[in-house]
Structure formats: structure tokens, C-alpha cells
Amino acid sequence: MIYCVEDDDSIRELMLYTLRASGFEGRGFSEAGEFWQEMELARSGSGTLPRLIMLDIMLPGEDGISILQKLRSNPVTAGVPVIMATARGTEYDKVKGLDLGADDYLAKPFGMMEMISRIKAVLRRSEPKQGEDSLAFGGVVVNLSQHTVTVNGTPVDMPLKEFELLKLFMENPGMAFSRDKLLSRIWDTDYMGESRTVDVHISSLRTRLGEWGSSIKTVRSVGYRLEVPHA
Image (cartoon, rainbow, N blue to C red; front, side, top):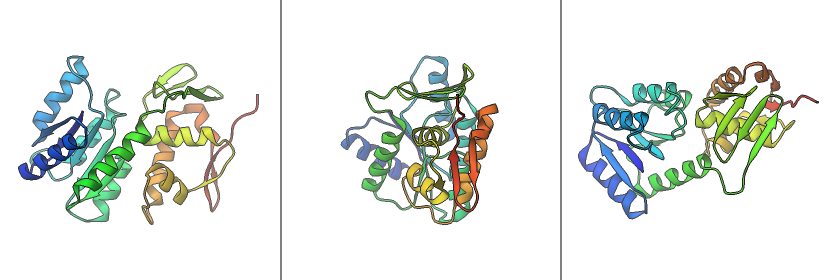
């Protein structure tokens, strides 16, 4: 199920029509209130979380940035992929959304086929492939099939982008990744000049990993790498 939070009725209906024509289930919301009512059902166990949320920034009442912040701060919804849509065309909206944990963004007006392509790309990254199991170093264990992380045996809630960063580092221990390469690999597109987004996510990831966060080393003038402790 894909949720579309969009106040323009014609755009929302077109998005839902395209989703259904492309084999997805879709549900639309014109404002934050009705969206949160549906999410509360999922949190209470009476419903299920969406696979992905298409979230417009400019909404009546509570805007998309506020909604995104609440989604990422709640352990139940922190891992739900979110694609932001903005009509403003400013760098601030894009960077703000990415820094807060959005998985991708679309600038209005966007084509429906581009929307479907972005949705499929984000879902490919967020839903583990069959046969994958787990990765580990030190006290950190990533279960790829369950999409969970434990640190010293304690479950840690982790947003999608941080999970993907950690997975990439653990799959390539000792390899240095430039910020541009991380943007390309994790965000699946070219966000030129927005390396601050990588730095923000790395900082947050280190904090979530506790004592093991220091294993993610800053490589001067390059980017970051995972230094796996020897047994």
C-alpha cells in the first residue's frame, strides 16, 4: 500500500490512478489529520503500515516537513520510506527533507512515470532480497531479512537511509567511500553539492551505534570508511 498525502484533488487522483495502473495499491489523503488517523490504526495494530509514503511539503495545516519529523521520531514509523514532493523549487526544501530522513524527493510538476520509477527504486533499496541473512561486526548485528539492527544485543530503531549506509559499510569493511559516492549509492541519484546530507546521516548513525559508532572513521579529504575491530 502506497500512501499519497497531497491536498490537490486532481493531482492526488492522478497519482492514485497511476499507482493502481502500475500494480500498486494506493490510498490518498488531502491533509495531515486524516493521514494520522490511518497511521494510528497501524500503530495500534488495527491496520498495517504503508510500504511507502508520497508526501507533499505544502499542505494545509500541518506541512510535510512536520509530518516527516514525526514519522522519523516514532520507532514504529521510523523505517517507512518517504518520498517528498515540493513545488517551491528551492534547495532549502530539498536539503531539509533529506536531512530529516526523506528517502527521495520529486520537484513539481513531475511526470507520473518518473514517480513510479522513483517509488520502485526506493522500494528496491528498502526491501531486502530473498536469501540475504545478516551482517555483523563487534556488537553490531544487522538482520537484512528482518530489516533490524541490534547493538550489544539491544534493538536499535534506524531510519532507512542510516540502515542503508550501515549495510553498505558492513558489506565493504575498510573501503573508503567519498561523499559523492555515498550520495550516488544510497540516494540513487546525483545530489550535487549536498555532502552535508551525508555528514548529518553519518553523525546520527554513529550516535545510534553507541560505542561502536567510532568504528565509522572520517577519511580526510575523502569521506568515510568502516574500520572493523579485530577479534
